[in-house]
Length: 74
Image (cartoon, rainbow, N blue to C red; front, side):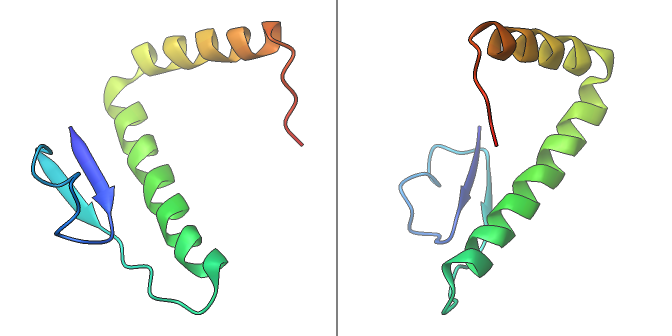
């Protein structure tokens, strides 16, 4: 398990095997959220690369499920 948080005192840290700390001290909400989004996207890409074809198969299944539920994003 990994924790992605902004503080070492977060309750997410003790049970995690790895913890990543992303500070959010900013006068703009979007700046701090941007750091989280970029970090998470990079982490997901690394995991997908490690999983290879297994990741693609899993993602394709989720995309089919979302399409069947007729969920639109936009």
